[in-house]
Length: 580
Image (cartoon, rainbow, N blue to C red; front, top):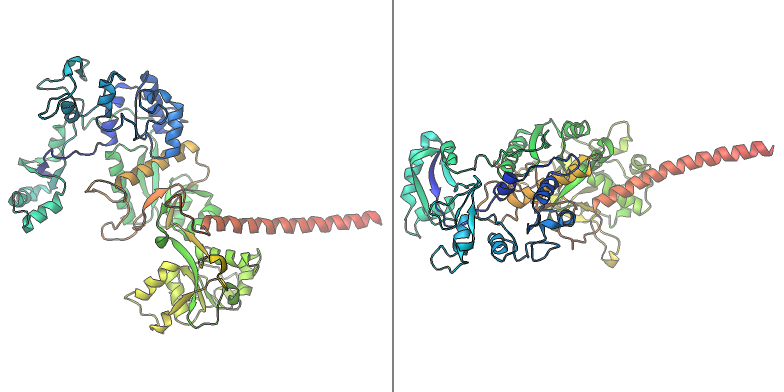
């Protein structure tokens, strides 16, 4: 790979965590307490090294944990304007914040960029800065030099972004890009250059084209920035994937995290399917995987997994379970469905469990779920249910009745009377370009969603809602490991999610990857959170997590009632025997 152009220093390039932490990593002896998160180990070491400091801004991207750390190590906020929170609102936060902390007399040393030092002390034209005579540059070799030195000592240099090409094509690409420079702003050449390089005014030619290794070696300290001492054994988060494209995206995520200094490191392990991934987590062969709402109950019940974070989305993109019938049918409400032929996407999934909960809530079935569902509905299709169960639950199934699309096909073909599916799947089914189902017609997809009989008190028509995906981990994971792992993914979301503030983004977590949709994460995901809602003000009713809890309580109550009945009968027999 050859580099053909380097971007001129017109706009500021965002500092990575590696560069921001470079000074601390250089002078502070790292600590590796096994019961502390990586972040807290770093903060604790810095706190022990410096008597007082102003480390303004978030230390971690999880507000509760950030407050906890700042309360625990208050000396790192003691020089700030707000000595308790030292947030991004602090007067010493930002690129020049540490310089003001120094020249205000609060601190003794400032870690800053050279292009901020120069205007701060008046070394650039048009700036009347602080008198530099009382300040010096502290060099890595433990010497000092004047601020106005013509060859100032620097600790680390971040190289400017480049345009890269294959070695065999580098010269040709360079000639093409050269022909675009200085084009008329209205020309196609200028627009093409703007697509390649939208945030810099100038692109400088490298003559001759240079290898990546040689270019990076020019940047003092940059290649060493990733080689500071780390904890041993190293902590690694193993992500389980189920396809080649998921593994490829996971590898990009891993490399991107490493470039930005995010710890613990990531690793990618491929399994054949989600069930095998859940087995790998349960056996401690992997650490985390993303699952759809349909797999949540299985993950929790069969593999003792729990949720670490959710893919949160606006209400319109949530998996919202509804009961769907054809317009003109006799069904007006959920209770009218007794005897109806039902179509489900999969046994034990969100639609099945939501229908169970809806019927239990209306006292239409009890806790012996499979048997009572078979008695309530007529001949139905529940893909994935074993043939040991009542024939009523699988008699109507065909090979193409699986999933939301299959359940709607079951309904549209006339085999079923009602389908329990995601509300978003209805329009997808209607708009599908490749529908070749028997009996398909415009009339066959004229659907309606069942609501309550009178829908008084503005009751919701949906039976449940869930975020599109969630990250599952072992329930036995330590609190320290959970904090480390959650912090990693929240940082990645901040760098490569939809809230990324720069104009260009080298990698996107949420969006199409290599032309494919919903790889690892869903395209519609807005952000990752450790709660299922996108905003704290979200108040949508019937969250799926609560429904699963209610169903489990019903199971437990049924077991307790049976046991209590047996004990009561035994007690009665003993009483009769004694009386005789």
